[in-house]
Length: 432
Length: 144
Image 1: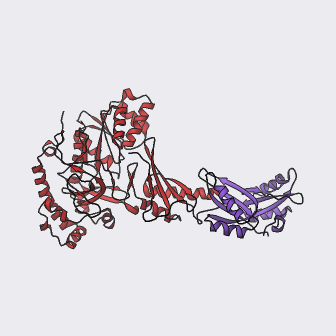
Image 2 (image 1 turned 120 degrees about the vertical axis):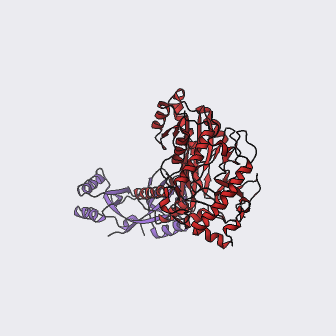
Image 3 (image 1 turned 60 degrees about the vertical axis):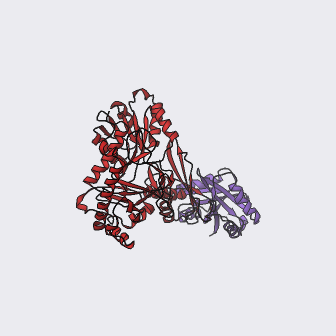
């Protein structure tokens, strides 16, 4: 069985990887300097020219990019190629409602799909396999990324997109899917449905690639046991490309970062200082091969640890742990990025005060979101149906902003604790 | 035209929330003439007619309640079988849409009193006066 999609890259020596990174970083900094005025200005403010960056050792000198920069430069300000050279956008929600839009040239798509193909081969995927992709297709990167990777491996690809469990199970059994790609919570839900319907004997799955939200080792064992598969994690973000920035191998002890495309650093989220290997901190990525959306030193806000310990799978690329938290207040609910500030914006627009509480839970393996907000005099009425309408309107506005359903609970005034310093707005009851 | 004000108060749907509000009113020496509750799964609306609406409102606002004042009409109906039924029949014939109604605690002069909140107040009043149905006065109800 083929163990690697691109063996010469995935098992290259550390020296070779570093040589690629040095060469590509220098080239990329020149590319950005010449084509992205927004970043060039940031470099100039630090007194930098491309000549100051001679290799990975100089990377720490470059300025960071954050989600705020993406918002400020929205939509075209961080592009490295003219629109006529771009063939695709993907998008994700950003803070306070402004979306993140990432651009891709055909080459960008190719390299991204290579990364996803590596992930699929790493879980045992070959051209003999039937790969069922139940991530959302469309603006979300999950579906398109794994779909492209699956094509590259030569799997028969089932482009299911998310939802419609009846149809998922019908195709899974009728077409004998062997690999499934979805969020871990949906995998758990599917497993439950399979047992309820007594379909366990008709399932031919051997592996699952589950990403886009946090999950625990316990959840991995549960899903592996109930579906009789091996379950693998995958990591990515739209800003950097999408799923496949890093992926798990058979060892299941962390995700190999595709270092020939992305240089990873761990920094202290407070000072921005680069931390030594093995220390926990914020993950920062520099894209060294991307053309259309070449972000340098992008702060992911994900907290994790990097490890260069030798991996038994033979891959030599650095491994990242599962993200252990965030250095900002972003929540991932049903695979969707949710910022409390988005919820706050909607509440204020709808005439409520900024006193609210967000309660996230996982019920029957599916994330739930509840927004508790205090009733205000303006929104109150003697008529229950009018209050009900206001509530419905708020639910609709939240759905439009977040892209997911949030239950609204109206509570009496002054029942939500006022902020003393840092407000406790988020109660995350999920055990993951 | 008798101007009677109902106070509507937002209540959370949990044990004790009604007692809290009536406690506040008791503390301020407010007497209730009528009360009704409408509820959904998570919250309710308590509607009251207080003997002193102004004082009651001030006390509740001070305690941080969310409330609204709504003008309502109190109709006196004969306190006998079919007394209310007759009135409602006339309102139905006049196509008056009742949003909600409830009864008042007072019984005087063989009259019972019903609090009405309707969609179209003008039409409502027209039907009442066309049939000589009386409205309660504040004095009758012991309201300030």
